[in-house]
Length: 103
Image (cartoon, rainbow, N blue to C red):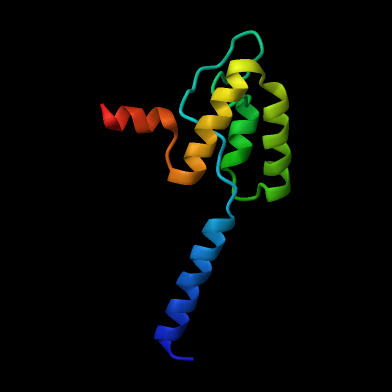
């Protein structure tokens, strides 16, 4: 294989892997409830936030954590999270950051 073909294959693999990535649930509302220890925005605790950032964290753990987060949130908080997380998945930016950019 030529160097150019290897280069193209490597970049295609990066694109494919990026599309399979499980995106962090952070929606840029980073305030922690002092009573529960969970973020008002994404519903994670500080340990979960750290785990999401490590390269060793498995996709299985991330999927399970997303499920746990959604069970932990309720009412307007769950609706807000789901709307903003969906926007982040589709547009690469949370609704909060998008609104800041539009101001």
